[in-house]
Length: 82
Image (tube, rainbow, N blue to C red; front, top):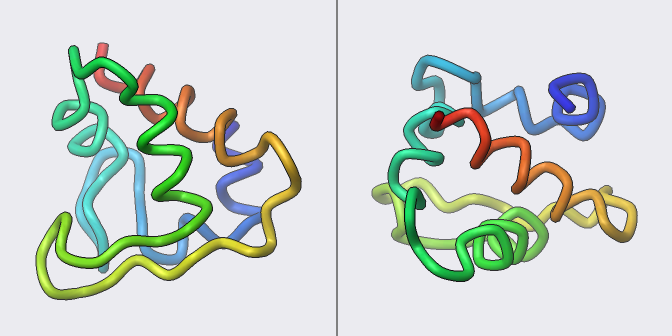
């Protein structure tokens, strides 16, 4: 799944275990841990982008993702918290 994140340019701003321009995937997983609907919410954020969830830098939408890829990435990211 990390390969897909690289191919879709997610790793330009994110890294698995350290903050770059955006929070690490492990930090994202920790924030969502135990929340009902976390995978769907995160997939929506990945696909549509967001503002203000992690500070002042907005996350752009990801129109380059094929159907289902945001969900697959969300599940992978959430799994990094364990």
